[in-house]
Every structure is written in C-alpha cells, then in structure tokens.
Image 1: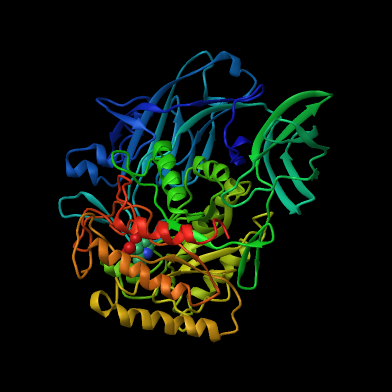
Image 2 (image 1 turned 90 degrees about the horizontal axis):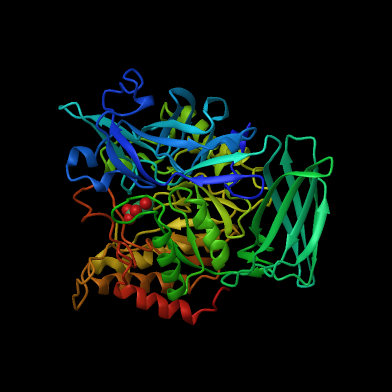
Length: 600
Ligand SMILES: CCC[C@@H]1NC[C@@H](O)[C@H](O)[C@H]1C(=O)O
C-alpha cells in the first residue's frame, strides 16, 4: 500500500501532487470530545488557520499560545474524477507531534512523530468528482516515552502545560505542507543509490522497489538533459564516463529517471536529482570523494517569527545565503529532521547536512534544569516504549533522506545521558538496529555534552565520529574565568589526543547568548564583544588539534524557547538574530572561514 512509501510527491504523466496549503478550519479540543461531537465532519465556529504553520504565535491570548492537548484541522478537498483507478493519498510533511486522519468521517490512520512525513491512503474513503471532508486530530503533548522527550503537567486550573526537556519551543501544528496525491496502482514505492567515483568514471548502483510484476528502465541525465547512462532491471549499475562529481560548495546534480513498464507500456515514472559523490571516514579524516573536508557551519533550527516551526522557503533561501556569505559548508539539522525541501536546497548548494532525529532531552539533568528528576534518563521505566518510537523515527529519517547527496551523516541522539552504564544496552540496540538502514552506510553518531566527556561517557565506542557540545565560557567557567575554561577544554582534548581513539571530532555546539547591540569594553557576558572572545578561544583550541575536523557554533540564528529566567525571549546564541541580521561575531567568523580553504 502507498503508506509505506516516503518518496517526495511529484506531478508527471502518471502521478499528481496537489498542495493543500492555505487556510484550514481549526479548533482546540481540550476535552478530547471531537470524535464524539462529529468534528470529523466539520467544526462549529472554527478559527481560520494557515497551513503550513505552527499555531502558537498567531494568538494574542496566552492560553491559546501555550495550548497543550488535542486540536483539529478540517478542510473540504475536491477530488477530481480523473483520479479514478489511482491510489489516492494525503501526504503530511509533518503533524506535530501525533495525528489521526479522517476522510468523510471515516478514520484512516494515526501517526506518531512530529518531524517526519506519512501518507494516509484514502482511496476507499473518497467520493470522486466531489468535495470531501478531510479532518486531522493532532496532539502536541510531551512525554518521556516519546520524541522529543518531556513532560506534560496539568495546572491547578485544569489547563495542560508542556514541560520540554529540551531548549526549543514546543511549536505545534501542521508545520509542513499537506499534499493530495494520486499514483498508479502499480508504482515505484522507493529507490536507493550507492556510488563509486573517480575523476575518470562514476558508477551508480541503484535499486528500485516496486510490488508490481513490471519491467524497470532507468536512465541518468546530466544538467543539460543529455542521457549519460541507461540500465534495465530493478537493480543495476549506471556507469558515467568523465563524470561531474557533486563537490562541497560546488554541487552538480544528475537526474535519475525510473520507469515501470507492463507489456511495453509505461505505467509509472519517478525522477529525482542525485549527486555523484562518496562519503568516508578514514582515521581522523572525513572524506568526500576521497578528499578530506573540514566542516564549517552551524547547528540550526526550523524557527522564525509568525509561523514558528513552519518550513518557510523564504527563510531557507536567506539562511543558505547567510551560510554562503559567511563561508560555511555544512549544518546539523538540530534537533529533528527538517522539511525535505531543505535537503533538496542543500543538494543544489553543495552543503553537507548531519541529519538528526528528535531524540533530544534524553537527559534528566536537562529536565532538572526544567524541574525533572535527578537520575539517569536510561533508568526510567519509559525506556522500552521510547526505544520503539526512537528506532521507528531513525528508520523513517534514513528511508526519507537517504538519496540526498547533501546528507553526510546520521545523528541518532542529541546530548543523551551516557555517563551511566544503563545507557549502554540502549545504545547497543540503537546502533545494531540502525546498522543496515542506509545503503550508503554513512557515518552514525550522536552529540556528547559537558557531562559526557572522554572520562565519563560509557558510550564512546558507538559513534563513527564524535560530535562534541562544549560550553566553557558560558554554562561554566564563564566571563573572566574563561581562561580556566580554555585550560579545561585543552585538558580534555589532550585526553582524546593521548587515547587510542582515531576518529574525527567535530564541535557541534559551543557559544554564548548575545544581546544584539549590547557593547561593552572590556567585554561582559551577553555583549557582542564577549561572543567573539568566546569564539576566538574555541578557535585557538581547534587550531591546536589536527583531529578536530569541524566547527559548528550554536546557533546560526536566535530562536524561540520556553520562557524562563535563563532565557530572554528565547535562546540568543545566534551568530545572526532571529530576523537573520548579523551580530558582530558574523563578521569575525566570515573572516576566519574565508581564510580557510572553501570546502576542505
Ligand atoms: C549545555 C547544553 C547546551 C544546549 N544544547 C542543546 C541545544 O538545543 C540548546 O539550545 C543548548 C543551549 O542551552 O544553548
């Protein structure tokens, strides 16, 4: 059935893709009475709500902005007669955090996980040539046995409140586009590629997945549209002489075209843009096309004013221009898989992405910062249920993103509590169960924060390379004490250096909250001068160890978090402000990164 496919929707001679962006009817359902009251057929006195968007920041009253619980989106959708005989589906880019889909009052399916797509097969529930009622019930509560981890508490006044164990706002809703799709009954439901490359020749080993008894024809065209290779069969090789490889910050995309034929007639086709390149880890080096790459970039968020965590192509265009301006070549999709369009954009711009699942907040210390327990997260009784959702989302992330040349690596967790032995069985399972998901076998890793050092982490054997989140100068040894912070950082890196570990280290987070426009001589914390001094300290350290192969300060831009006495309208560690304007540190980093080789 079409629900197992995560292929991005396309319109072509055999398939149709209609975006259902725009205003939907919207209504909160605090008493969870929607089904009982017939909301699957329509909402009484609804609010008009934009899609894609988070609902939160549109509201002027706090109960609505902070709303936690069930809420509904309903839209009338005309389904044309010419869909007759096709499989008809609703494809959700993301429904945050869990959803149930109804069509004409009939329950179709549910889905857990607010940052990955799913398709509801509505073929049997639709009336062709008429308007159909699409209703989606969404819930945005946080739980310790779900991703991202947190709690949901009930206040004395009966209202629910999200308590995230993570540092970004629980923006919720239909944060990405909803597509009405029609595909042939006999169809391609997935494909994958692996590569061998040299300057003289590149080979694309492809696999096409279909349930149909059909012939498969595959061709590869260059950017000018010239067919450079063809093959037949559901698996095979496309050999390209004198290929133009996909390079970091110098992208080149070929178009792979897959056709299904029955008795010589094409019944389905799917094409996609791919990049001929390889990714390897060799000793302390990260290699692209067998050449070492040094990562310069950021941790990011899908976050902007008005629509919260909605994917916004305008913001993405600006962010990629900022990254080019500053000399970056990479980013981490912290702390969840981003919209597919972000990866397509990075494919075109030659940017490398460390793709991260929303396994974030797996650390009670973070929770205690937010009022949680003081124990190892992995001793919790919620771990078994959590793991099922965790590995399910790792599988979907890799299945969805595996064909992007921009994807460099998979980050399977952010800052988990690995300082206790109870983390080991969890990570043993996670790395065993994810070992064969990526046909290209790209490196898998997770970020290690302050409590998870060379000395204290019990899980250093799992990552293929290390992502370190370190905050001397901010969360400890801050201000005038930063010299001790540098000494401590050097001491830890000396331990890595003197160990027998021979894998690359990338600094995936470091930084200082900075109020734009706050200047002080000499510097103080929160001033633009201090943010630069902190970066200078880290860069002195990075330039002292040759196994450090990447620097990705936190964060590209300021972003929204819960309100709290440690946050001034969100996290201000951005090198750019939330409206994407530079702080002084942006000019400092641009100077440093443009003095390094562009991509290596
Ligand atoms: C000490 C952990 C730092 C933390 N790391 C995860 C990010 O999502 C947060 O924003 C960042 C912060 O607090 O700035």
